[in-house]
Image (cartoon, rainbow, N blue to C red; front, side, top):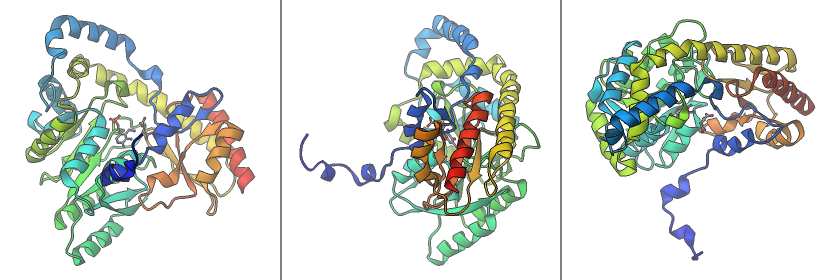
Length: 402
Ligand code: PMP
Ligand code: G9A
């Protein structure tokens, strides 16, 4: 290895951090560990038979096209299907407002790439999706956090942050939110907060990045409209994905935004990967066209709802006094708060080694490193029996630390 490598890596590279979630994924495969860590969809939901049939047909009938490079914007047929799919939520996005990406994770990186210079302010929720933080951090912005309550981002506090920036003659490049069954907290932003957020974004002349991979997975209650559907100014960049509704292995997701912004994304994506895989796009388009997507969602909801219920019941039965948690109406995650003074990061090695249970340390989701006494649990991957046993183990560990 040559000497002085440090001096060769860019400042951006040195600002990059490994995802704790990705590191913990290795544990999912370890014998005897019950993992509440990575948000891996339950593999029993993967539509393997349908995908076998469709893949065969796509290769036989349109192999010359689907094995070729495709347009950067994405497969035109898939974009038409996506436009129709989003219309059911009141999102009016034509084909020219849509860019297909290689996972929403690429969409987040593209957002960082086209908007951020070092030191630029952006605003995120406290806590927020860790993968969003890692994507943005590599562009070295100044990240400001606004706390959540059970109605989502505290827009009254957001207003103070925006006002503080204005006094310095600055405005944030964007406000990043995960409004539906948020990763990590499971909280959904109320309609009133959505309207206030849009109003503030307009008054302070900034953009909103609405990242919504879990929207389809609503177990109960009424869905507030997407921010994109409430927006009148082309101020919202909407991200969604098939990772949680079909399978993450397809790596098919999309961004909907104003045409001008899409055109910048297209230019940026060309230097990343030229285009997303034509083959999985063609398969996804066919999957949608046959109505398989809408047909399968009720079954997924039923499965995840029952797992959420098992987790809530187990928490209720096992957790000691002073521990609290959210009760999400959908999605894959819930959020646990331990009494002040407990440190979930220090507890994790013991959870794994002594109890054989894993979770994601909450502070990783806080841009300011707070949240030491919090953790994220997912109920999507383990079986109901594993959920019961895992919560028993976790409660035992917490009791030992109280
Ligand atoms: N955003 C959020 C909020 C997520 O939870 C995830 C996946 N866990 C992603 C983006 C990335 O999803 P993908 O790249 O699989 O589409
Ligand atoms: O990194 C992954 O594998 C996706 C999961 C994300 C999460 O658990 O938040």
